[in-house]
Length: 180
Image 1: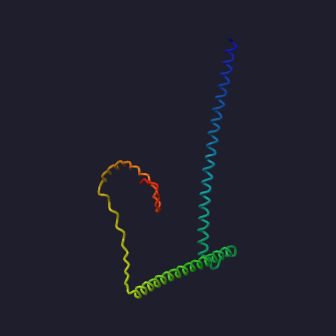
Image 2: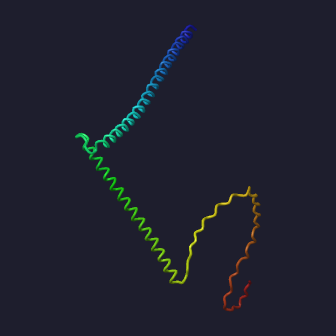
Image 3: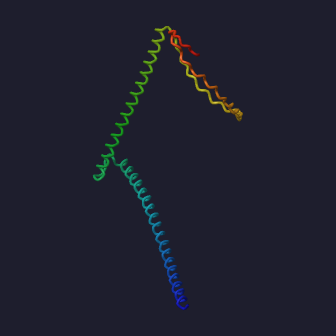
């Protein structure tokens, strides 16, 4: 029995050490989780601050360009020229868009006029006057109240079977009797 008590004592000590080790590992895991979370938050904050810097640089560049685009210093001259070229290209493309829209509007107007001429000519040739009225759809009416329940359909009565068809007799007379 002493061996069994000795075994229980050693098993209890081993279980206690395992529990202590599990607590230590859980504590380390909690610390690591907090560290990883902090790193992720810092990375998001860094990204946000870099975006703020990009916006500030762009605004600074815009201010400089507006103030010095006619006479930039040597280091900024190529960038100012690039901005001038891009602005001229944008203006040219916008002008082309305006021309295309004007042409489309003129074509649509000409088509409408041609259509009216065709309709007028057709009416005068035929001696008919056509008037087209466009009616606005009526607004849907609101339901007056709850609808009455529909009556259930009447049960169908089975149809009587059709009588079998008897083939017609040939037009030639023969001596055999035929049953109709």
